[in-house]
Image (cartoon, rainbow, N blue to C red; front, side, top):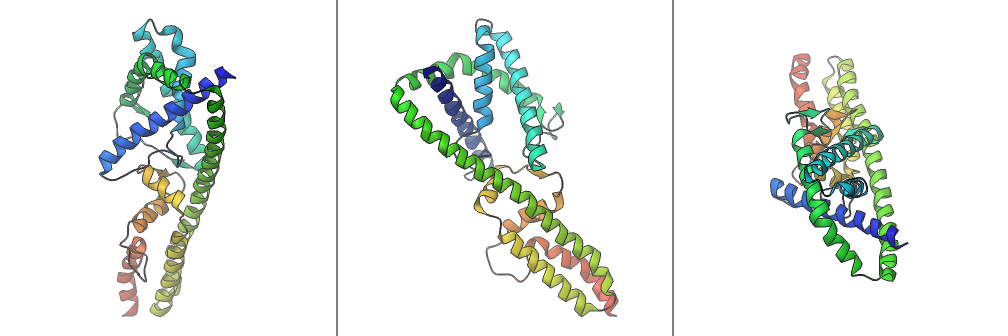
Amino acid sequence: MEIALLWFWRFILFSFAGWLMETILFTIEARHWVNRGFLAGPICPIYGSGAVLILLVLTPLQNAPALLALAGIVLATTLEYLTGWLMETIFHTRWWDYSRRRFNLHGRICLLNSLAWGVLSIVLVYGLNPLADRLIGSVSITWQMILAAVAIILFFIDLTTTVIGAINLNRQLAKLQDIASLIRRKNSEFGENMQQRLAFLTKNLRDWSKLSEKINPIQRRLLEAFPDLHSLRYPEALQRLRRWLKRPKKKQIWPSADITLLRNQLPTLRRKGK
């Protein structure tokens, strides 16, 4: 039991450390608060998983720092690639994208990050892990068990709600994409009837607006936490949704993200009205 608790709290502490590091970096870069990470809570499980994997596999190499760093690069980079691929497969979205960086592979991993994993492996084994073990050891086993039970419940609630939110976001993007495609496809069928064209555009753009209003706080947070998030199936809808969410907070007839759709139709409408 004590060994299981030790590994559990190592996972939690290093997940928190990873969340803290990424949140600080992205907050500085964005110049406003960014709750970085897939989950709403202050943990990034990929860091906790990577740390546990490194400690389980590479502790025998602690007397060979260079070999430890190299093995850490391989293990953590493999985990990052597989995690990116798995999340793309499940949610049909790319949560991070290193395509603009040199020496990347499918945008999921890159050389710079891999080298950083090697450095972090050294810091983890020689510095952070002994510190974490002392912190864990300062808490009684009874309290470790109580807090672990609470943490597990909160973790699975957070995970469940976030996964549902991410899946529903993809479904909403599909509906938004359908509306935009319908506008393009059906608009030409009205011929020279400008009144019908405008009525059709108004109705569908209002539908687009109402559907976008259904984006909940969990989905908004995901979009803010992952500014490089790309939809593999509905990229146009995601781009328009981002612009709509950044619109001025005032009442509008037209959703600002899609006002360009109407503007693009105006030259045609004018020609048809002559």
